[in-house]
Length: 120
Image (cartoon, rainbow, N blue to C red):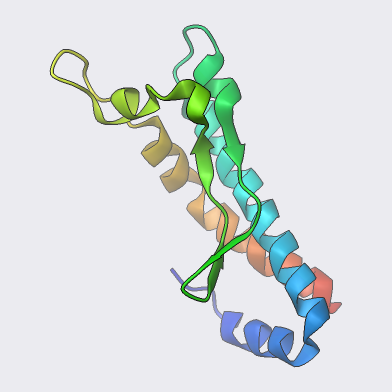
């Protein structure tokens, strides 16, 4: 997915150097929060443990690409059973639905935070 003008924003960030890292990280964390909230809204609640365990990670880098991870923690190991189902449990893809509902808003949030950081 791409936003119009995002390449120009990224080029401007590269020019700024060290300050750009803080702007990028803040934008990623804010976008992660948008996705986290959407996933929580889709999470089925029985005891509340699964919903409470959904968190956004800090900014990580893999293969030169920065990202955040959003999803349940280890205390809700059964989340994969809920998401994908089992032989006896019908799948309830709450994480997929939450992501799909929020991905455009998350991209807009990234663009907005970068523009704000650049003073545009």
